[in-house]
Image 1 (spheres, rainbow, N blue to C red):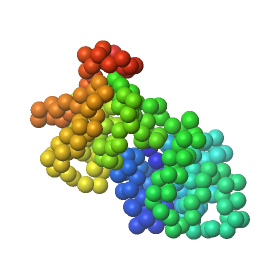
Image 2 (cartoon, one colour; image 1 turned 90 degrees about the vertical axis):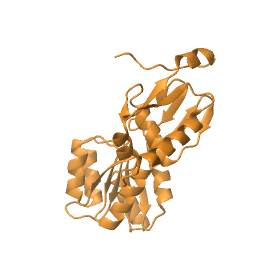
Image 3 (cartoon, helix red, strand yellow; image 1 turned 45 degrees about the horizontal axis):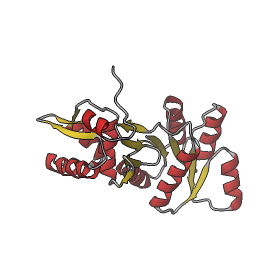
Image 4 (cartoon, helix red, strand yellow; image 1 turned 90 degrees about the horizontal axis):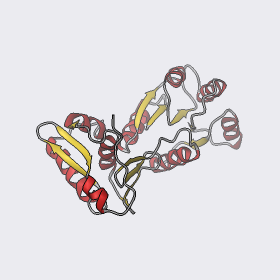
Length: 238
C-alpha cells in the first residue's frame, strides 16, 4: 500500500518514513508542497499525510489543488495549529483528518487505518491464497477461521509472497521489501521465514517453500484444499 508523506522537517520526515515502512507501507516523500502536488498528479496513493507549513505550497493549498483536480485520495493534515478555526479551515479545504503536533506515532497509524477503512476506492482488495487471507487495508491475516498475529516484518514478507503466489521471489527482493532501512543477514531472513511458517501451520493450505540458492515461493497444497471442508482459492492460470 503506497502512501505520500509531505513534511519540511527532514528529521520528522525520516522518522515517519522509517516507521511506516516498518509497518508494511510503501512510502514516497516530499519536503515541498509543490513537489507533493506533482507526486499526487503522477501517482495513485492509498492515503496522504501533509504538513500544513511547507515551502512552495502549504498543505491547505496542496489539498485544494488536489480536490479541484478531482483527486479523492484520503488526506490527513499534520500541523502544530490547534485552534478550532484552524481545524475548520483545514477540513473545509478538503482534508479528511487533522492531526496536531506533537503526536504519538501509534495514533498516526490508527488514523491512517481509519482513513483507509472509510475510503473503499482507496482500499486494495483482500489477497487470498488457499484458505489464507490478507487484508492490506487493515493488515489483518486469517488462516482458515483463525486470525494470525504477525510482526510488521513477517507481514511484509507474507504480503510480498501472496502477491506473487507460485513464483520464486529472491532473498534480496524479500529483504529489500521487509527491511527497507537495513541490510539483514540471510540467517535473519531464514529465522523470520521459519517463524512465519510456524504461524501459518494448522488450517492453512499454503506452504512456504525454499528454493535452494535463490529465494522462496508460496505454493497452495491442493491435497490440503481437498481435505479441508472450506473455500479454497487457487491461483489463476496465466
